[in-house]
Image 1 (cartoon, rainbow, N blue to C red):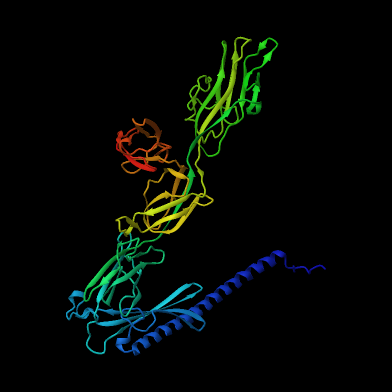
Image 2 (image 1 turned 135 degrees about the horizontal axis):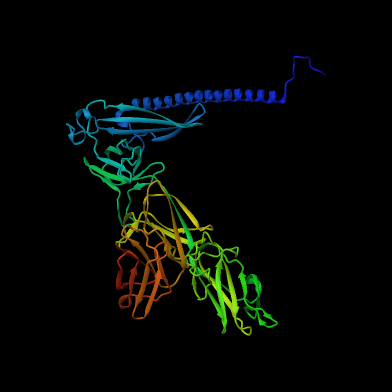
Length: 586
């Protein structure tokens, strides 16, 4: 059917645009509706919270003054400190805190004119509830005055100060005080003010007040009781004396995470080609592989010259550094062999700046590859040119070897320990009791474990007693400081355990590890003299050595370019898994 002139039908584009416009409008309407519903719900819930708080305050005001208190609180009473209340399909948490207060009108603390600091009671009721946009809280406070003249309450005062690692006050820190040994028993929770302080008046006299301080996302600080494993706790549970103030300071801060990774150390490996067949030859001309050697090809008139070959490309996983090239050859009179090192294509020579004399040909073994860039040349090809001036003689290449440093590689399922520097007392024998001591850490199948929620401290990592390894190197000097609100990764390199070993870590005066230092361990009787260069972590590891104590102790000499030589003569004890640190001065 043909549309009348001047009229047109709707197209697909018109329909899409119209649908999009309607969608925008309806999304806005739905969003506005949701906000309206949420606002109405919040207002309804808030009204319920205010009603519950007022109800509790009215109940408190109706009680005799002596009965105004909470269960386990100071002052003591029968009002629950915390309870869950359901109202209008909303679940509320109602907390009641009642405390003695010192009215500044007649002087505060020691300046109180009548010596009575428990002038009145303050009731604080907090009601919280959870809705879609988070947790909401309302707080109402009321003053409860005595019916007559204020009277002194027998007891003492607990004064708390909570700071962080920088000694900055921590506000709203939770302080729980528990003591079942006084009457009435105490189990109350209070919070610090903006100055990081909290004061509790009228505390029943007695010993054994257990105090725990924390905050959401923060570490915990507390008092400790005497036990068989901690006979002299620090800080011990608090005592309160009549009309005396007991003050205590606690330090807490934001928790951190620490990751420990375990690796096998960097090691030197060597690959040797013995030419048992031609599989190690990539290309060749004028040479033959036979009898475990590469020789010139025999022609009608004897050996033809010259001949050459290129090996297949050599590479290794986890390459750290190229080390050296060596070869075994035979060069009878009138013959010669020249080696060259190429990139993986076998066409581009490694420049002479990295292998001196490479372009002219290398004739003296071994050849250092230490300056060859591993990033530019992750693979190498060896080339050799064989020549003779006597058709009756041929040179032969019997074998060649390339060595390289490889690693580290992740080492899974290593048992670890970690101990902090903070102490909480001593044993009966005087040994330190550490606040953090974890002997059941395992690096898992990935060779990596993350410890979450760790307090700021200086931590030392070790190996579990059951492991068959010993620490060979740690790039992060131990102990290692973990700062608040941080994430830290420590890489631990381990080697097979030997009965006696010595780990020497070398660093400068500022604590920076020194690599490539010459670390010499030696003694006369029994004779021993070995030098090991410190690795990239500044560590030298001597394994499988004999014990050295008393008159058979070892001597140690450490030197590095730009530093004074360190000498320790007959002072290094080695017994089991041993360790010593050396600081080199400029």
